[in-house]
Length: 257
Image 1 (cartoon, rainbow, N blue to C red):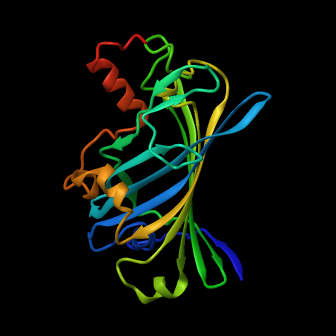
Image 2 (image 1 turned 45 degrees about the vertical axis):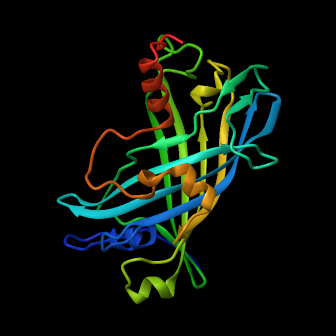
């Protein structure tokens, strides 16, 4: 049986709880999601190229407020040599011929307001697949005028495409924390630290993972204690690779690069 369902909501119903149970836990317990995958890049008539391995984790805690559910999270991820899967410190950019310093992902916070909305899902046999397509377009934290060597444009445009897989029996059992796996694909501009300027082209991330009780030892050490715990309180704005690059450039007094 394959059936895609988009729930028609009625007032007073907690339609968001099922997805919260799949993505995190509805009783406020911390959950760790681990993923691994790869990053590809291409330009017109060039590529795709296998640029990086990519592995990381997100630690989340769900809570309710007046608007519904929200997730308090922080996350880390490492860019890896695509062949050896070793953590990179520098990278030889094949598009420019220049070596650049790699900036790994240490995003704190990565908070998400979910509200009370139902997340659409597809029933495939005994599996339930919640799917979330995030289409992004907003003013870039790195305006070209200020960061000509590191900004693809004045508008950040990307897509984050998620699928969360769980067993229907686990959902029906009603436990606050439902075991799940997920896939994630992101289409985005060049990363700022790649120093690609306004060269045309894009990146594609292709990863998969799931909720886990523990993560690989090397990744736990890479993360450090802080990034193995979810935030205690809601703060804003969120951190991204683009805002992290901007903040570091400002601290180093090179915001014109």
